[in-house]
Image 1: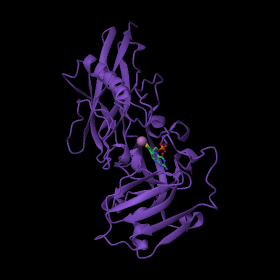
Image 2: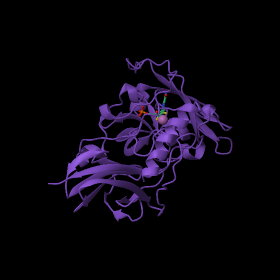
Image 3: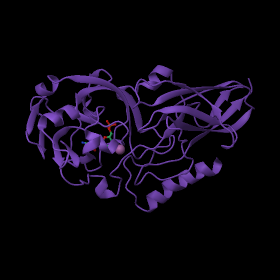
Image 4: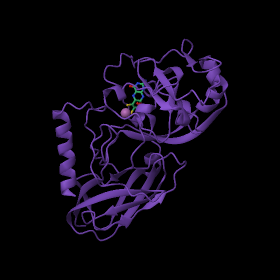
Length: 336
Ligand SMILES: Nc1nc2c(c(=O)[nH]1)N[C@H]1C(S)=C(S)[C@@H](COP(=O)(O)O)O[C@H]1N2
Ligand SMILES: [Mo]
């Protein structure tokens, strides 16, 4: 386990030396010391939700886009091109969905992810109305008011759970998170979830977006992730009975089990997983450990998804396909 963490830090260093472009600045090894209550851990409050914008973004985040001026074009390989105004969006049938958003730059145990209930309109319904032809439509491109752009395959765009969202946790979508309208593609990394959308183009080729042109994945499927939120890394805590709590996210599949190891990943104990509100959501897990020895102990976490796949301990850097590896912490147990 010691080796695992050291390797992780080394990766960060190598990345910096090799001039690898990072999305979040590479400063993402989370160590949170507060014990978060289960409910507030499950839904990330909007003002605590991570934000990532590309570095050269000219977009001024201090002001909302004017919702009356804003419009969104639906064009390309469609038989009925459309222009939607804010009012048109609000007049469409909406639905609510809990889903987790995670940046592709997130390292094991990192903090660039959050969970929210989103309200928005169906992309599939909009594309059907615009008149698409599955034989020629290969990608759907989204362009933001800040010049950002990315695409998702047409088959994914036509999934029921893909949403153009305008409410986040019951509040108007905050400007930092893409007001008036942003894409939510459950199971795909943040890069694909374009904010401040002004243009949707149905395209007959394989479109490479902003980050793909810089060497990042065009697929964007989320890798399994799990994190120990409490206790914090190197936290002094009065034993011998200690409550562990954290989150785990499976990307395209739900998390079914979460396990903790107290012996350098040789044996694994089952944590208790609270069922999520949707298949696209992270889970909160809990584990009561009795009789921990005084002193420092390494603790690691891993998740198992609904297909039975176990989260890998192999460490991979974030570029190009998203990081893999397990989160581990050291707890310092004090005598009661
Ligand atoms: N228009 C626009 N959309 C964007 C980005 C951007 O820079 N501009 N960044 C992407 C990245 S890398 C991520 S991780 C998510 C972050 O969304 P959030 O800021 O709401 O957490 O937005 C994505 N959508
Ligand atoms: Mo991201």
